[in-house]
Image 1 (cartoon, chains in turn green, brown):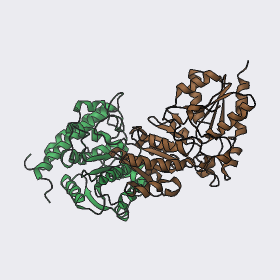
Image 2: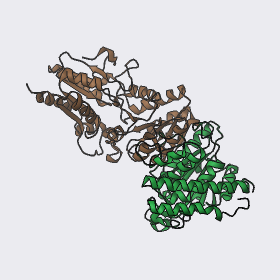
Image 3: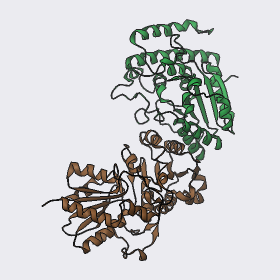
Length: 286
Length: 332
């Protein structure tokens, strides 16, 4: 499929790396927050803010914008970093993350930062809000799309399945959910804490169209998002398999990095790793 | 005597002359009127269409009625999403389940987002009757009034419930509306003043010795108590404090200054309810002795509405006793 050009993919991969760099810098400055999940979602957030979303960073309340609902609010630093790079606010403001008076709250708040569509943090509440927006939009024949990003851990929350049932019943085809399937949560691996598999079957049983992709393959992810637009009978969920901590070897696959930031000496190492990654991206024209 | 400005029904004293209806009927009528006036109004229901009266809206505006099934957490989050988009959702269930079960979803997705979702808690209080303690919500005022951005309104009869429902649309933020199941006297009229945030003086006496601050259908019992007390030579004011938050502090303080003693009445736990809110105001602005009439740290049980209200200490004799106690506490 040609939903995105090769050169655009390369551009986005470079952008994702820049966003990861901003992320490590802001988390280190903040001294608290989550590292693994945000790193793992850097490629997907880059794809959204720099290719998929119909949005206007200079007019975050534009009525026709696509809505990006972040349900697992704890990975908000990656959203902030992507928003800053997209032009919603100055990149230097990312250094105020989690500080007193900042618009960049530890968990995102709609009332504080324009462009954050919903307040989130307590898990399991994003899909219902996204479904509500999608339902209202369809009532008024609006054509914008609603995206809901969720963690895999919050698939354990009852509210998630109440909302999945509602969206399936109402065939909310203007809603696309994305599950960050990184297999980790605070207490360990999801399949040990509370098994989620077979996740695909569960969503299909709830009357969703289900796609599974490599969450670090931007082209495949964009293709999945495009396929979802073509499905009229059902909402679509994209189960995006990601590597927690993606981009920094020491953090990858290590669930202990769920809820802590890098220390300054670690950050130095990580940033240097990220900055040398440019050479590793196998793109002819770079 | 009855305040003329309150414009309550002429023959209010004596149940045989009064109509009787439940405040949930007021919601049912009010939300249809609100829907006629404003196309943004939608009603969300969690499998209780008939008993919440959401059915009346469904019959009139089927395309604006949204069925959620037995899923109160989703009732709140989908409501938040609809309001986020631009609708004015009324989310309806029994108060025991909403806000009883979905308190966190209301806190995060409605109050913290500051969205105009109208949370309609039906079947509040012990007067639910035979269903028993599980369905008799007695903690909802406490839950809702401590949430920032939330307005809390508890109408006293069917007519006031209708007005409150319609008025809630003009509040650009979350509102909790508390309704009851059982039929209670209809004593206010179309012409009775009602404004969210403004308490109304309903009964007035010269040189009052105490003020009864009431909300919900027990306001009627407060009026009966006031009349009977006046026959015993005891002079009181009765304030209809339907808006628990933001409270009409001026009215509450003014009444306290005039009477130097207060009795609060509500069909709710004494802890954390309207009386507690009144005490918070008076302790800071004009401390006076207060007696609280309500449920005293107990769950309800099955029974008939009236016998339960009496059993849990919220009948006319209890109100009169509380007034006499608070007057005694005033000292010389």
